[in-house]
Structure formats: C-alpha cells, structure tokens
Length: 137
Image (cartoon, rainbow, N blue to C red; front, side, top):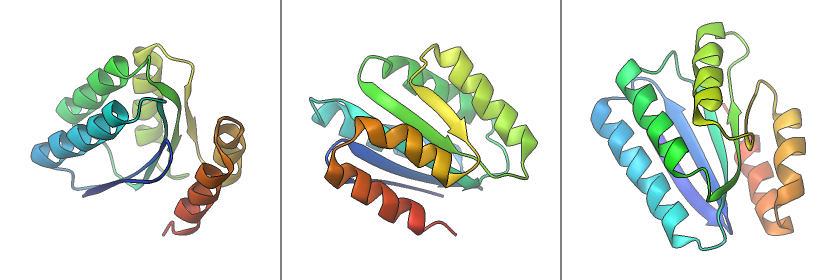
C-alpha cells in the first residue's frame, strides 16, 4: 500500500506500507516522478515507512534507480523509519548511500526529521509537513 500527495509547494508526502506489490511500486514511483517533473523548483520529500517490514529486492532497486534519476531535482528527502525494524533501517540506509546524494537522510523520530527538512522549506510547506507528521499512526 502507498500514498503520494503534493498538497503544498515542493513538498511530496509519501506513505509506504507492506504488502507493497510490484505494480504498486511502479505506480508509486511514477506518481512521485510526475510530481517532481511538474515542479520546476525541485522537490522536498518526506517518506514515512513506519508500516513497512522490508522492501523486496526488486522494489528496493526500483526505488534506488528513481533516487539516482532525481539526484539533481530533489533538495532534500527524509525517510522516517520504525524504531524497532533494524533490517529495514539497514536497507534504507544502503539505498541512501548507493544513491550518492547527501541530501537524503533516514530518521527514527519526527523531531529530528522536521528539524532537518524545515530549513529548506517555505512556511506553507513546513506547516503541511507538520500536518503530515501529526497523522502518523
């Protein structure tokens, strides 16, 4: 399961949960790429992974390819990881490392995530980020 929304400026809000079949991965990536392409001012992305067990290797590779393609157009991407899932954390951290872009970072708490993203956001984007994070469950 996934959702991708762009409610404010450059902010792209992504929620992922398992199961995440290959067709949904493709649709999710297409939606993210569509929003990034439309916005000529780049993107700031927040990806919530609290309900993901682990990404299938094929899915992880598709996300990595998307990350590499978007390196020049994404200002920052923050990944919110579950505190109790070390395997997913290692997987996401490998993807971030392999994408070769220091503007991506993984977090296990919303306070640190927000503190890292907000400095590159407008006030409206920051307000929407706070709404997005407040809806976590």
